[in-house]
Length: 110
Length: 114
Image (cartoon, rainbow over all chains, first blue to last red; front, top):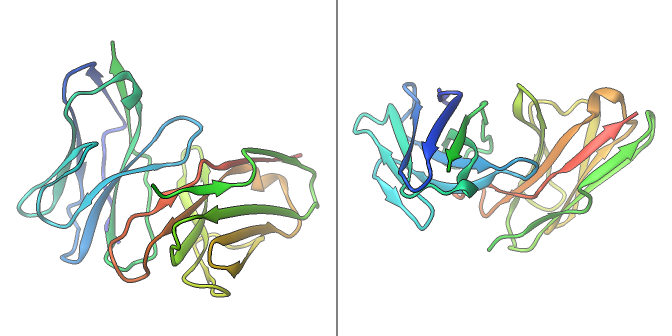
């Protein structure tokens, strides 16, 4: 599975959009992009995933570039409860391995 | 919503003890997984299972075994606990083996081996 690169930390003002980038330049055509987050002392929480089209759900939006080499997770109106470590993962369809890196620590500031 | 329940949030065991970590999911998922999470190392896959009585080794199976006698339950066994197995253990499940369904995690068991 392709590896991902994320900035180690980011800050965002409460109420503003949080845009979390992820590079996956070696992604192959059958690999999906998944986003999870982990709040301290809890298990990772699934947020969203996609293959090549942009996706939106009640939690976030996922924007994947046309060449699929990078993506951005958007939390439209960040709250203090969105403070967490966010993981970007690529995984081949049907693959049994989700490789979690060290993620981005997002701090939402009041 | 999918619910993955791990039987204990915190466990303290002694070196050499046999330790059982239990995990139950309530959504009839085919796949179940055990990870451990350590600072600076991210999540590492220990074992996973596609179906009842089926198991596959992950990246770090040494010192562990698993059991899946029922579809909803996946147990991780430390045959003889050692201090280097002190970690956060996370169980997860996913719907199907061949699709793109995401993993759903439990809240973890923090195991300390003294």
